[in-house]
Length: 236
Image 1 (cartoon, rainbow, N blue to C red):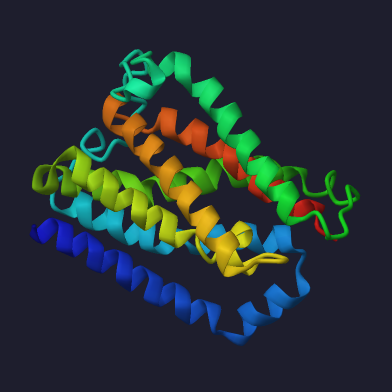
Image 2 (cartoon, rainbow, N blue to C red; image 1 turned 30 degrees about the horizontal axis):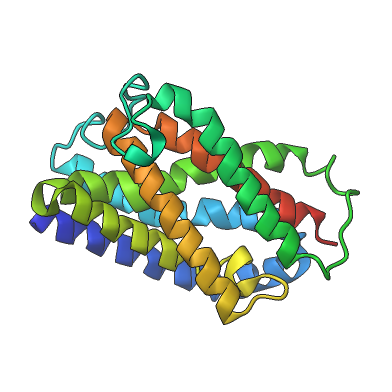
C-alpha cells in the first residue's frame, strides 16, 4: 500500500510542477503564439514530469522493468475479453488500432464540422505527426497504466485496478482537445469523450495485463493519438 500511495503522491507532485509551468508567462505567451500542434507536442513533453517521478519512485524500491510492463510482452497471449473471442493480441492489435482510430476520427470530424480546416501545415508538421503518437502514447501508458497496474494489482486485483485506471484515464480526457477545451467543446462532448477514453483505457489495460508488456497497448494507443494530433494540424 505504501508503494501505491507513494506513486500516487509522485503523480500529484508531478502535476503540481506541471501547473506551475502552465502558469508562467513564458508558457502562456508560447501557447498564445505557437501553432496548436506545436504547443501540444511540447505539452506532452511537460506531462512527462509526473511520469518520470512515478517511474523513479517505483524503480527506487526495486521494481524491475518487467514488473512495470516496460517490456514487449507476449503478443501471442490470448485476450482475456470474451468480446474479442479470446484471440491473441498479435491478431487483435492492428484491427483494434484501426477501429479505435476510426472512431476517434469520426468524433474529431464531427467536433470540427463548423471549423475552418487547412492542409497547408501538414508538410511542416510531419515530424510532429510522427513523433507525437509515439511519445505521447508511451508517456500516457506509463503514467496512467503501467505504474498504477504494477503497484495496484497485488492490492486490488485485476478487475478493480483496471476499473480504477480506466476511470482515471477517462476523467483525464474530459477537459482535453476532443473533450471540453477544443473548438466547440461542451460538457456533453467532454462526457462523451471521457467515456470513450475510459473504454479505450480498459482495453489498453487488458492488453497490458494479458501480454505482460506495453507494446500492444502502445500501438493501439498511438493510432488514436495520430488522429488527435492530425486534428490540431488541420485547424487553421
